[in-house]
Structure formats: structure tokens, C-alpha cells
Length: 121
Image (tube, rainbow, N blue to C red; front, side):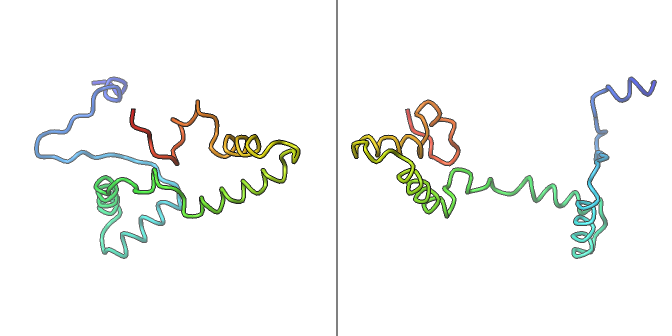
């Protein structure tokens, strides 16, 4: 079998054997893996396997749809800044509408916001 045909073939593992994979890491990541391996008294290859298993078995991040803890403070700061920038001669309800639209974003993009819960349809 030529080298070209071997590299294009599907990766198969014979029964009873683990696959061997080569990966490329930065020097910083390699150092961090080596430090983890040393702390856990294992070798690099076993450390990589254990870290990958830990990552794959970890629950999904809970904060994906949760608001940032400081998001309320950030929003309040944005509203204060917008109030200073808006024309003071605007009627109060128009000022509030503009502030709400700028803070929340246009409705056409609300489904793309990751910081807001998805609405049930």
C-alpha cells in the first residue's frame, strides 16, 4: 500500500487494540499537560487520555444561557450613558422606547442573542 493511499484511508482500529493518535500542542499546553501528569504521577500520553476523558464526560457549561453576574450593572451603566446622549427634548415614552431598543437590540436579532433565554413558540 502506498503512503498516499494510507493517509486517505478511513482510520480503523483492530479489535482489542486502542487507536494511536498524534496531536500537536503548543509549548505552553505541553508544559501544562506535563505538570498535570507529574502531579498525578503519570506519563504524558496517559495524562492526555485522562484529560480528554474528563473533558468529554464533563457536564455542559451551565452559564451558557445564564446572564453574566455583572450584566445588570453593565446594563444600568449603558442606560445611564444613553440617557445622557439622547435629545432631552424627546417625550419620555420615546426616550424609553429608544433606550429599550438600543439595550435589548432590534427584535429581528433577538433569536441570535445567547445571553437571553429562548422563547417558546
